[in-house]
Amino acid sequence: MKSALSKCPVCDGELTVTRLRCETCDTVIEGRFANAAFAGLTPEQLDFIETFVRCEGKLTRMQDEMALSYPTIRNRLQEVIRALGYEPGKDETPEISDEKRLSVLEDLDSGQISAEEAMRLLHAEE
Image (cartoon, rainbow, N blue to C red; front, top):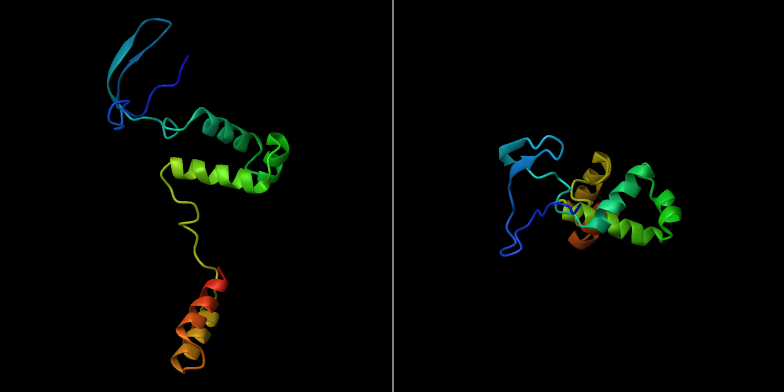
């Protein structure tokens, strides 16, 4: 059995599920049903997710199982994240201490470092 389409083949718009049918008893339910989060993923992306779960999210185990390099595994994970509508790393916050940030800003204010140097120092901790 093929997976349900999630995008319209004509205009690429989001398809809505409006009818479900039981194969066993022929019961039909009609309404508006939300598509599953993974409905728009390719079969390859779904296989990747299955392997990811089986390997408990450990990319090094996935390397062995899929016989791919770590960068390739990481790139495929980022592709899946984007396909789900997220941006990889977007929610990550810089791990710079308040003391370090204050010190850099004081050095910038006193003219000891340039704005470019301050930016480099603040982002070097990320």
